[in-house]
Structures are given as structure tokens and as C-alpha cells.
Image (cartoon, rainbow, N blue to C red; front, top):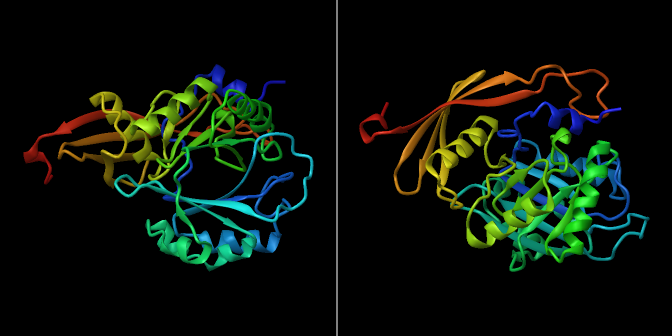
Length: 313
């Protein structure tokens, strides 16, 4: 029986513009097994999980659980847990970390401020500080959400650890199971699909050099899907791979067609036409789906650099 991943790969389904959207990621270490909706089906207090989901709603913050790669026999609740917060909007990117003995303290965070890029509550509530270590590679491995994530994600995480890559964590959910193994690289917030160890290592090396790897990239989580596709298209068209120099400044349209304006830090502008299509033929969007679907795809049909006289139009 084919998995959702093998079908997607065989149909060469495009991945651009499929990343989960979040201006800020809030990550809490939670070892042990995870259920399909890990915030409320793990060893984390489900009442806390529901409260975190509610607090993050509409703020741009996405909450996920992380654990160290390896065997997941129940090790018991750790006395100290690692917490990360990462803001992914270009020009204001940051990654902070903290340790806590009481995850209930996360409810004291100012989620609206975190989503807007203000880390002060993370410092005040958790004693968080700018993360000085390696960039993070979060590999989705939650087989209870979709078996492909475990079958493909866990070996990838293990391979990265075995080859000496630092900053690797398993994560509960990044969306797009059919693109497994899926990986999110922080602090810049670019997601990757069908990722091999080489791509992840190159993406992490790129972070250290301040550049973005577009091979296998699904998009930057800071933007909605049309903006993700537009930004990657401009990078390819302009040969611009430096991190933090492109910004999605305007999106006109409500679908299925958008005109997206992408701005460069040097003043250049592009207008990108993105059209939403349906991926055909119908295929499983996840291994647990009861019916076949036609997942939306973001097709870039035009990339135009704007002359200065066209910027006001």
C-alpha cells in the first residue's frame, strides 16, 4: 500500500508555498510519546495544552512540543525543560531560549507581543536570553499524527545526530505530512520537505552564513502561502539567497489569484502573480485521511521587477 509521501513524490507535487504559518514559534520540551494532537495527548497536562492553544490563537504564535531524538520509551517527566521562542519576520529575526521547572509559567507570556516580535515577556517570565548555540533543525516525527513522519522523520533525525549535527530536535507537527520528512530551520523559519541529511546540513550551514537554501524549501513561516511562494520565486529569479533581505510587503487579492509585492532591502521591488490550483489527480493528503483530496498548490505565473515609476501603482 502506497503512503501519502510516496504518492506525492511520484506525482512530483510542488512544495513551494506549503509551510505552516507562524510569525513566532514557541517550543516546549516534552519527552515521551505523543498523540495525534500532542498538546493535549502527551504527558503534558492536557489542561495546560488547551490553555496554550487558546492563548496563542490569533496572535501569530504557533506552539509545538519538542524532544531529543532517540528512543521514546517513557523516561518520566524531566525536572527541567528547554523552551525556545523564535520570531521569523525578516529584519526582526531572533531566537531565544530558557529552561523551566514549571511549564505552567508559559501561560504568563504575552502571546500577542511575542507574535509581533517582542521577546520581553519571554525574558521576564522565563528568564529567557538570546540563544547563542547552534541554529535549530526541527524534524517532524509524530507517527501518531501521520505514519510517514515517523517512518521517514525519525531516521533522518537519527542520521543527523549520528553525523554530529547539533541543534536537532524532534517536533510534533509542521504540516504537510505528504512531504515527509519535513524540517523547520530556526531562527529564519524556512521549512523543507522530502528532506535528506545533506539538505538539512546545508540549510543549517546557510543559517550560519546568513543565507537561505532554496532546494527543497517549502517557504518561510512568517508569511501566508502566496507570500511564501512569491518570495522563493524572487530568490530564484534574482539569484538572491541572502537571509533577511527580502520582505513580503503587500498581498492583493483573496484567492484564487494574488498579486504579491516583494521588497529588497536595497530598494528593489517585484510584483509576483500567484494562482491557487488543485493538485491532480486526487491523492491522500495524509495516511490517515479517509478520502482522497486535491490539496491546494501555489503556482507562480509571473515575476516582474518594478521600475521606480511603477511602485506607486
